[in-house]
Length: 292
Image 1: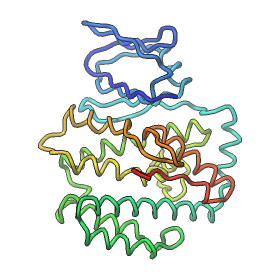
Image 2 (image 1 turned 90 degrees about the vertical axis):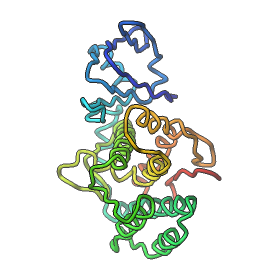
Image 3 (image 1 turned 45 degrees about the vertical axis):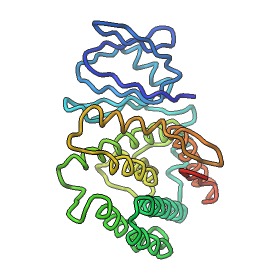
């Protein structure tokens, strides 16, 4: 089972040899067994890859994320076909009816707000946490009352101050966006690996968003990034801060009664959502917990 997060910095050449990723730098050469890699982050624009390596990374379903000149995630590598029966899976996806999509989206939103509430309690924001708690029974099917939006305003103002805005250009938003983009990339891997397409979502349906389904599924996991960022002293957002966020994927959580790394928990959760959609049964959904 893949578990490593591999980050490539500086000038390097990457190639493939006998099931290993070979990283060649001027001062050293290192090898990493590809079967252990869950995420390969190319943080530098001074990195070259062989086509043989790219093909093997895709075949082993390694999520590859490329960064821009500012070392921020910019793009990712995705295969055309995630599994042998992707045509069948896509037909299933197109047949998901609105009722089950709304029911599952309601469960996702409820879990997201519950996770936000728990973080506020953990940090001592009791009044705001109580407010989010009161929103949960008010959630309607498909979140028609937009409790998610109301909760987000209360939540972010509690974490980062009343003047905080998600559209502002600051280190907090840079860190949040960096973390969210990494989680989105991992969910894109799971969607494609299970044979579905990322563009057709449950709730998100922006014609300019190529990752609508992944954007839906990742919602309950955003709080993990929020928790990380609120505990960081962000006088700068550089390499060390980014590596701290990336290390979150090694965090252990509970899902389906067992302890798993976050990376594996995402696999289990995503698969449970697809089962719930195809079997029209929200009881199949498996959410993670920080503790039992």
